[in-house]
Image (cartoon, rainbow, N blue to C red; front, side, top):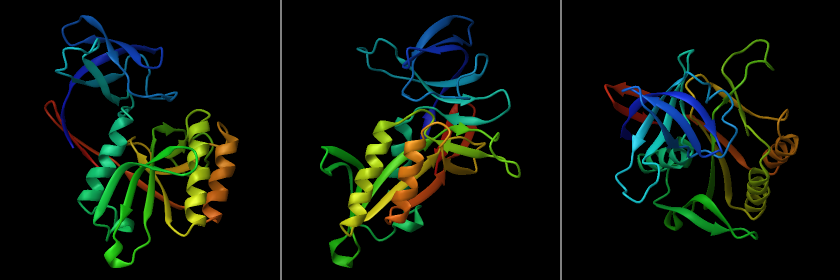
Length: 237
């Protein structure tokens, strides 16, 4: 993925979907934040943020917060919408080795008993592969305080996630029915090297994840790579 982004300095994030920033010309403005999580460690006042610009004249806030460049040097994609786009690109380019051999990729397919949508449904009836249901979760929470001998420890979720719990229960049912159930953690933080369930934040999710593994749900982890040339950012798993 390639995006043209401009830098600004973060003042504060508020009301979940809004943030105030200082633009390069010194003026202040409000931008949109496509992230429902707590964004712990991703939204510190004074951080450099990178934003995209929409040409939709109907948008109240034409700027969207895409990346955070922390004062410690880490890069974080805070626009969680991008996670599925990174995965879609990786699937189409055969980057995810565990998911090769599927010739049909259907995003946002309805499934389960709770009127849910799976992020990606993969099938290839001619090759005898079991159908694959892929749920994508973006990981941006870096916290090394719980590890003594390693750094770069990421956690999911960054707040209690009843939605995430529901997705795990549905993936368990998929696995029980004989299809492939896959939870893919997209690491969107350059400082994170591994992901664990955040039992200190959402104990129920952590327990469900352990049960999901026992029931045959596959857990995959892929990390986004960042490259910046002038204002052009290239990002991919």
